Amino acid sequence: MADGRKEPKSKYTLDRGMPGAFEGETVTRRRFMTLTANGAGAVAVAAFALPALGFAAGSALFDRPPVHWEPVGAEDDFPDDTYLPRVLTVVAGIGQVGRTTIYVRARNDKTDTPPNPPGYDERFIAMSTRCMHLGCPVRYIDAAKRFVCPCHGGVYNFEGGVDGGPPVRPLDRFYTRVRNGQVEVGPRYSVNSEFRRFPSYRDPAQDLDGIGQYLYPGRFSTPKMD
Amino acid sequence: MKLPLPPLPAALQPKPKRPGESEHVKPVEQLKEAGIATVDWIDERTSLSQPTRWIMFRKIPKGTNWFYTLGSATLFAFLSQAVTGVFLAMYYDPSVTNAYESTRHITNDVFLGEFVRGMHKWGSTVMVILVCLHMARTFFFGAYKYPRELNWVIGVVLLILTFVMSFTGYLLPFDQRSYWATIVGVNINGTGPLAGPFLSDFLRGGAEFGSTTLSRFYSIHMLLIPGAIFALIGAHLYLVTKLGTTAPPWLKAEGSDGLREERV
Image 1 (spheres, each protein chain N blue to C red):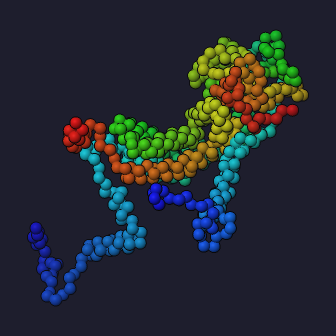
Image 2: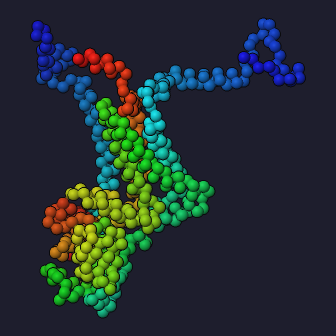
């Protein structure tokens, strides 16, 4: 052409003089075949890739473990001025790996703040030994009335609140109840620095004050308490 | 130059050729011919000699030195990990109740078990060190610049995958150190905002460290990541071959004086 530019092609195959073109047809048969073959390939890949991904991530993120209550001792066993260590099975069927030490004591309504939230009437406190820095096991030291973590020096007071070191929130706790004179320990829950309960317990190092509770959302697999 | 024959008895000395007799082919020559014929047969059907020559006989810049071998050293460290890992898998049992016992069995009972496991264990550290040295060489020699940026990016992905291998492999002996290091490592993953809690649950296979955590780490360690590393090393080496290596930065380009004069 004179100005050196190509005339734009018509979008209709009929106008472009293609053999066997239909009136109003815009997609050539070659293009249609290409799209169909690629689309079929994509469907075939998705047919095995999506179930495989769901298989890998689904039960990890969505499976709700059953609520399990484990008796740890008689009501009278536990004083309210010191903790007694007990061993709790957190994951059943895998032997020692599924067990963890917890510290249990009676609740002292005079010193334990805040009071039980409405709907709860807990008379015992079951403290998790999972350090809220990165998950090492803490130990209760009676002489100091404190929990101490061996890894990076996290220190917690008698209520489990952070006294020093890198932990971001107080120690997790477990729900407790009394059945037939036995103290029973149930699922884990987390608390923030004001001891507000978060039934969807968070991993260690996840802050639950201020914006932290939104940056670290609860999981879909929180045990259903009722 | 022809060496004199040893003083052999006449019966053992090779007889001179009779006139009109066809050339006698020695067995060594026959073997050589057979080798060449086989390679020719394959090459005629695959044309593999061309890419082989493209990979093996490349021009390399002046000043190439021992620092340029760090990449190959890393590759061999990885191959060593792959081979020893495959054979360790023949004796290892990734179940929470048997993992430690099978590791102990490899170390104490199996013939050469301690040696092969030791190669795998210390080799992982060697590989991380070599990867970092290789990366430092690339950085300090300016070998990440145009047109090699993409190869740098692939290299960084390989570095991360190497760390993932170290992290997942650390759990497998399943002793106290493995267990608590993995608890801490998974919790560090959980500190990422918004996605972190789901990532840590994905790694553990649930909210608690359970029976699936170990088999999950095992599968990631021996199937998922090695496949990705193999593929990316292929891409990495293709780009090295295609783009060539860089000269060390202390070497000046020849004829640069002439260019400077022209610019005046």
